[in-house]
Image (tube, rainbow, N blue to C red):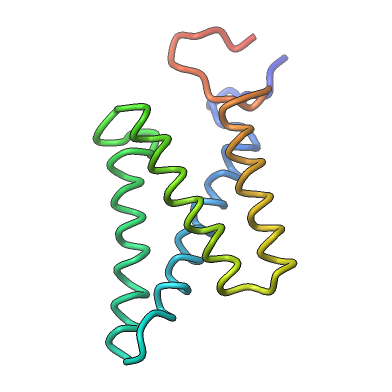
Length: 125
């Protein structure tokens, strides 16, 4: 028996989706704190997460437009790493540490161990 379900989605995949949504929210909150004017706050709160979502869709999403593994990994490092840094800027330190640990553990588990994503056609055993 494997950790992967019939639909090909496991518990870590569900958590990964939550981590990705949290990353966008953290980047939006951090971006909204940039600048000193209302316009800068709005632009930062919209453009920073929009850039992250665009990069993710192009390079890191399961059905990414550009299927280059190195760019996918680099995008994940930039977006999720940026979210971890943003967590330290917008959350109390203890919560920021929790967020950073969850991001790292979840990301590592998507590549290694029983929850690792495998390429189509590979054995799930």
